[in-house]
Image 1 (cartoon, rainbow, N blue to C red):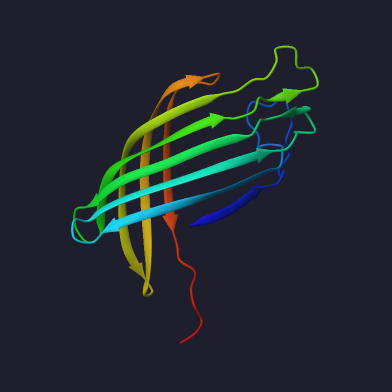
Image 2: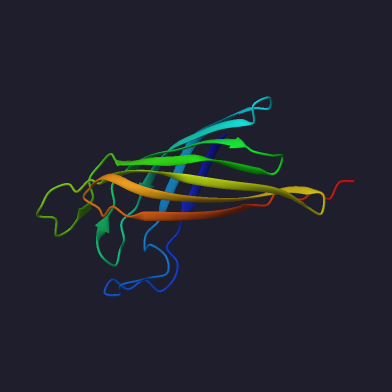
Length: 163
């Protein structure tokens, strides 16, 4: 798999707020991924590596550096619909953050995480959908907080009008 995705500034971003809708700056993320599935054992291994380029937040004059990430998962189907496994990620900032008031030099962060995952596949109107839940515990953080992360995804395939 090869992917490219982006982010545009949306919402009413205000620097003094504790929470904002959107991140206040544009970004683009691209990468490659691979999945191996062994139908005999029900084992599945996936990995995705990518880079994220961030633009300056014009309201704060702050720009995040170039980020790299590696996301991986290893799971086993326990029956035709359910899979369980372990997943993780490594985030490493390649270049430092910068701002017009920068007095401390380049600011780089990193973190790694690992945790359980569970997945379920089901059919809706003849199409194969899947739901996935991953819980991560972060460690080896530098210049950022360690914590816990929970991700829920629902994959809905595009429908075809050709019959």
